[in-house]
Amino acid sequence: MSTLKEAIRAGVHVKALRDIANRLRFGPDAPQSDELIWVHPRDVVNWYKPDPQNGAPRFRRRHSGMVAPGDWDRSTKPFGSHLKLNSIRKHFEDGVPWEDTPLFDWMLKEIDIHGRIDGCYTREDLIARYERLDRIYEETKHTRRLRPHGSVNDTRREHGGILVHITRDGTPLRDGGGMHRFAIAYILDLEKVPAQLGVIHPDAVASGVLAKLREPPD
Image 1 (cartoon, helix red, strand yellow):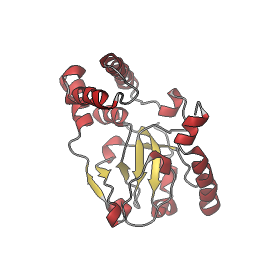
Image 2 (cartoon, rainbow, N blue to C red):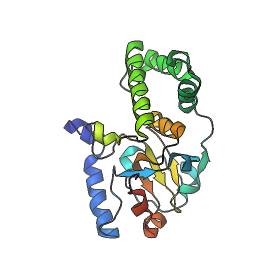
Image 3 (cartoon, helix red, strand yellow):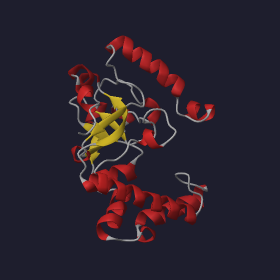
Image 4 (spheres, helix red, strand yellow):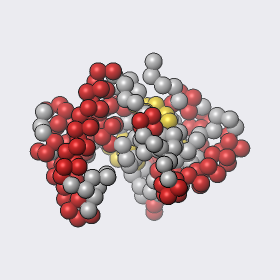
């Protein structure tokens, strides 16, 4: 984290205490907040579906590394259609210009309403953002690897990367940010994609699934 303000916003102080508690409870191989894990993108078939009234709270990046018991991991919805994923596929698979995708139009409206989105304040910012995404896509297509978010950004571990929760049987659930990078990995059917560990079920910790999730691609 580059500033104290950003560290506080990311909940680093709380995460550090969580890491200590996890280590005391689960030993040296305990899950860590903002930890880098690796998942096969096509193994992600469901989104996490927050449903607080039925034991499925809304999780944020600040909950990364939390070991959460209960049936929250049974609250899911099919990956299916998604504005960002659909638009990204239209661009990379069908050659539709970014400016002609529903996503670009939606982000322009968000800028009009809120003044910014994803660090973009103007149409020109959006164009520059998607030019960078085109470069990431071409690099990834050539190397067959997507570099970890934390290796190219000033972040704590993999904070800000593709957020993935881990269910009791080790299945990854998508939730929150990193959709553009995930969509690239999904479209290119990469062997593994770097992700930020979200919340993990204690059954998954007990089964030792983290050892496999920590293995980078060959």
